[in-house]
Length: 119
Length: 273
Image: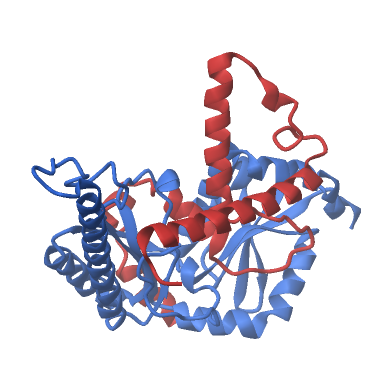
């Protein structure tokens, strides 16, 4: 257990002052990046397919855009949309994932051309 | 164990044993209490979710709701951090769920070698995040300097002159951006020499991070506790060397990015995505 004694010495007890360049509550993007895309992966008994962070970002953007639009014209269609309400969503989510991936590939290809980057 | 079948066990991390009092009062996902399941010199830090296999869809639904996802992600991270403050910690990815605590013990046994190896690498070390942002010059014709607004006085062929200027402009911007990206990649590699290990991550999306500048380097470094100060000092000094960029240092983090020892290692990406 010698590991433990050397371990604690380097870390400040106070979270707020022991951190570099970030406030006490870390940036959500930093947290999501780590807990969704990093960390040890163990196949549990219950399989939860998480959206990876890239797809999540796209989904959030679509959702925000849709909500703003909906609010503008005063409708609540998302309550009935199978991809956004809780019923019948599994299949819809898979389809949506595929669509988002495809869209992402297109955007990436476009971005590469736009920036004059290789590949 | 019919009682166990009514609930699911959520694992936050594996660690070397520490005093259980450090988990007193700690709340995890959905505000549930946290405790350890031990096997020999390994502990799994777990919580019991009021949840059965039949509710799987409900959890999945929750994880797709941005606000719920944020709450769950932060709760997961808070528990991992608490453990990390006390012991050598191997953080788990979000939503690792078993049918019972007995199944977690079986996981500890089955993965012992893998867990021991990972923990040995992580002992006495922390993860430091280093991101470099740059105000890359846009290649869009409507923004940036010039923008084609200059009048072509007395030119014989204003159309051709415009196209030539525009092409030169784009080439200038591309090379300026490339120079920044290369400098960021070099910085990443310089810091890597001071670290035990490193990972270059995908650039963060401005829509999620809220940062409008381009993220040209997103790196994680595994650093000895004894070299944190010198590592951070070096990272900060590099900040000054790169005039057009801004360096953001985060951490110390539990070593999420180094939890999988065999993750492929690439050279520093230039502009990611």
